[in-house]
Length: 162
Image 1 (cartoon, rainbow, N blue to C red):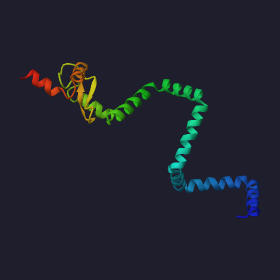
Image 2: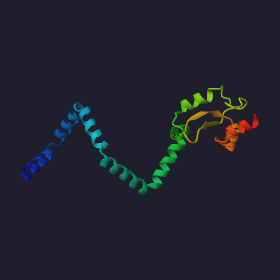
Image 3: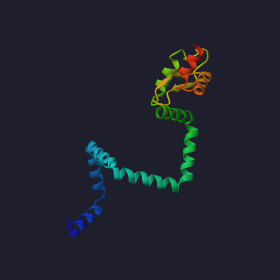
Image 4: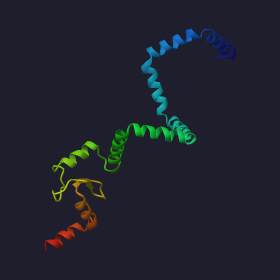
């Protein structure tokens, strides 16, 4: 496009602002899906994603007091929601399960420890080497397993039952 043509278009747009607004509003309404698809493709590009993350990081550093204040206000206003979200993240990250799956494990034995069946479940027992979840335990049984160690458990059973 020549600079003369670009200059003409700029002058025409400035003289017909209302016409341009109506045209673009109508265009956005009739081509909504196409526009969203283009935006999505743009946002998914790695260099764009990295640039957005970097801008966000810089903004948070420059406005850390504001960010901290707003985060705290949101936490106070949504305390139960924030605690639940934290639990969801923790169980998903640490054990790879949802809260619903955790509740199913805790209710499997009527909410009682799967070793002694005498006390309520407090801990989610898992194998430290494989990460496999074994079940729910009370504090005493969990501590006993931890003190004996997974590898020494068979030796302890042999010792008790010669």
